[in-house]
Image (cartoon, rainbow, N blue to C red; front, side):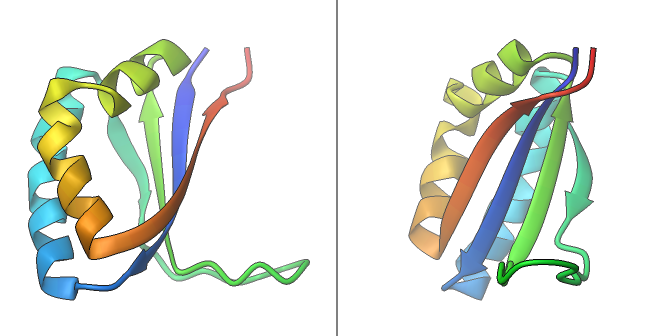
Length: 96
């Protein structure tokens, strides 16, 4: 079953966040991850959620997603993201 990391990101430092965006793709390759959504336009259909920047990453499994998130390769970019933005992230398992 696939694993997905879904993030809602509020960017505080656009310049530093651009550096983060440039660094992430190489870290994803190692773990078989790929972008499904990367900051496209959003439209609220129900509720009061006001998302900022939505990112959806797909991995071959939830285990691969967690391995990427906790990896040495992603460590420096993650710290960069945490300095440049405030984010909420979840890991969700796909349909079997």
